[in-house]
Image 1 (spheres, rainbow, N blue to C red):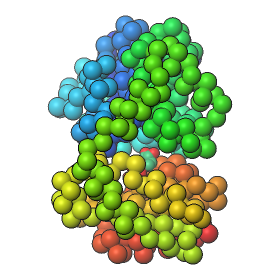
Image 2 (image 1 turned 180 degrees about the horizontal axis):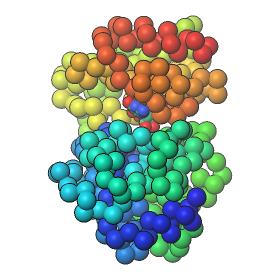
Image 3 (image 1 turned 90 degrees about the vertical axis):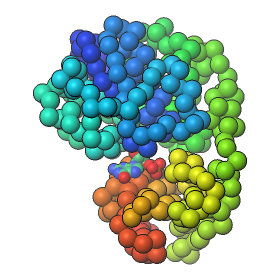
Image 4 (image 1 turned 60 degrees about the horizontal axis):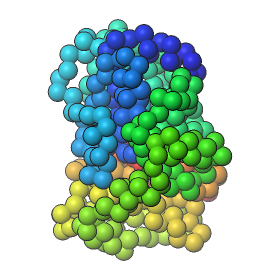
Length: 321
Ligand code: 5GP
Ligand code: MN
């Protein structure tokens, strides 16, 4: 898997890397670490994302610039790579139009059931994060190429995609990789935690307090929901980026097996689903609403009102109880 990817990708002169819409720590960390690796190995790289990057992660841009694609001439590139997503539409219009070129499109990802047209795919569902896969890419090629910047970028993605190493996707190999990054990058977990979790704007906590107040239990306490309305965002002067991580809170209620976060987003409702039970597959659940993700973390969009969304989404999830 890694050897084929490495030998093919390093033959290209100029490559564009895309991270997914509404970027998180894992896709951005992967994108930056992979860009640095390609650059180190003589490949010219552009890194694109169509959305804004949350304030607590903009330090990554000092390591490698990620820009919004401004109608780039895709025929200038020899290949494209997407990281941390299994379908091109999750990466926006520019990434989708890469399909209209005859250039290869590579993928490094840990979501189930990727599209089947990718070149030499690195796709592993059991990986805690895409950043853990990028770490193995470095390790297979030349671990000594891991430096202070790439180590921090990869560690960021591992921490954020595992709920600070709490999820059951965390294996001994995940911890070995993280430890190696700490050593090679010469930093402590605290340094990254401070950047990510201790730099929240006050407005975000005000929004959180309003959202926590909406937590409701369903189906005898097996499911929980949490709501973020446009009005709450307006009142606290926050945006959707400020809701990162909120979906974890209802899961900490005793007895809750799965939860849904519902956020008003124009005329749609953004759904985030989380499970902490092997019996509840939120990827399957989200696919009923044309979304997707992993068994324990998934998302989708719902057309309609909040009330309808709660009713319909709970009813679909209840089929798995
Ligand atoms: P989140 O709830 O944090 O937005 O996303 C959780 C997981 O579900 C992520 O791994 C993400 O890739 C996936 N996901 C979120 N929203 C969507 C969506 O609208 N469509 C698909 N296919 N996957 C999504
Ligand atoms: Mn990820």
